[in-house]
Image 1 (cartoon, rainbow, N blue to C red):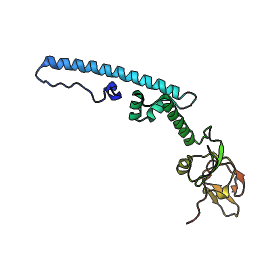
Image 2 (image 1 turned 90 degrees about the vertical axis):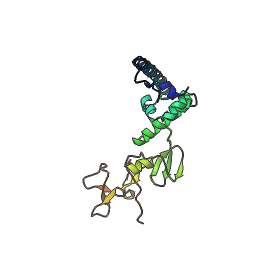
Image 3 (image 1 turned 45 degrees about the horizontal axis):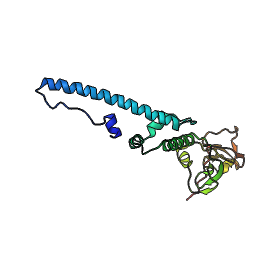
Image 4 (image 1 turned 45 degrees about the vertical axis):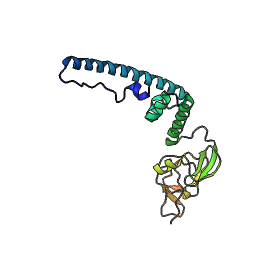
Length: 200
């Protein structure tokens, strides 16, 4: 019996006789009983799944309901049939938590190494070295913050717009600055730093 059978997906008793009122009444009663059973089974499956997801989310800030919403129907069915273990659900919950943290500009706990992304510049990562792309690239593309392991120079940033002064400018991202603006060579921490694109 599949997960769909348990939940009664696509299953219903149809009235095949329009002349026999007794049969019609019987099928309607049977249909109500079937729906009640399906609702009970659905609630039981949801309860068991949420219980497993609560274990998978232990120690995380992400909720079991949020993990459940992210699970595709086929994965829920695979969990119900025993093809997916609690360890797999735990790994999925941790990956989802990591993605959520990154989207919010928070550094995941295991990102302990300083690395350099070809597109994002200095970043925190799970390994050191130079990389062509990184998990922070989506933040850069969508204008979200990226925590930096080191200070940067405003002059090297795409968001630094010079004024009529050889060294002063303003941050187009609205980062804190003096009334006169930012001195381009000053070293500072900035989560919105973006490597200045070279003119083609």
